Length: 128
Image 1: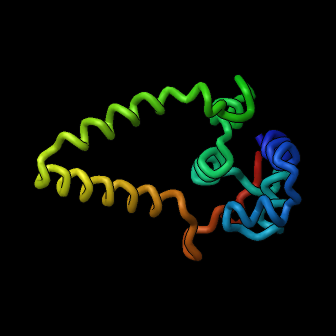
Image 2: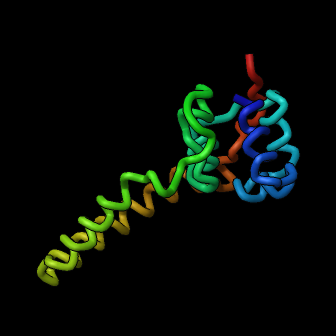
């Protein structure tokens, strides 16, 4: 998988420092991932896929295309339906739905956005 991470970075035209910054990690930590010294965690995979529109199947297993094709994104129709449904809700229900969305966003941010306590690269881990 580390070779595919490097391939993504090169395809995006980014050096290690800029790609690492996009993932909120240092260049040395990113280099350790790319060279296989550090393990690529699920959180790292989620960030790479989310921030760079990478196909997770390709990143994990080398299957399919490297990047998600936005024009083929099936979510666009679902998003339009969701917005149309939301517009028809009574005000109280809109408030309820918005509060649930805020909770969901916070949970996503807490699990995908790294903090100092929860580094992207788990220190001391090496690939076997």
